[in-house]
Length: 117
Image 1 (cartoon, rainbow, N blue to C red):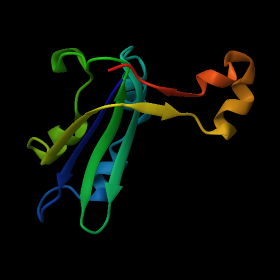
Image 2: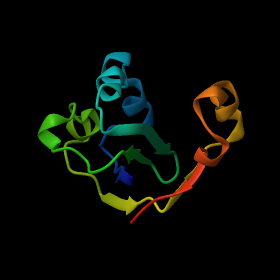
Image 3: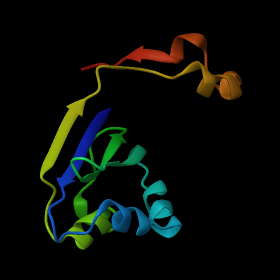
Image 4: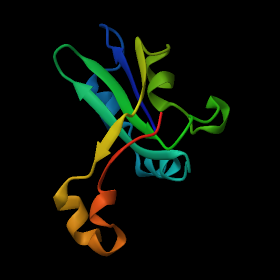
């Protein structure tokens, strides 16, 4: 499992947090939902300092960029992100409040696990 963090340090004259947040449309979000290798994507923001980005959890390796949906933030901002960090996940644990409604799908041992390297 791979975790990736990407963000822009927004400068004066670039789209602000409100503009970037407003561009997130259900159609764009649904396009990311159909990417099989993607376990989760979170769009993240910070008002001070102004930052916009995403945190993504990939099942295995990230697919080729050409196969992914349009990066609307990169289009709006007009440049590559300032920061791109990639980590291999060493362990994971699901919160009990998430597990309870899905209890029949999991064995107790499967809710927290270390990852093979």
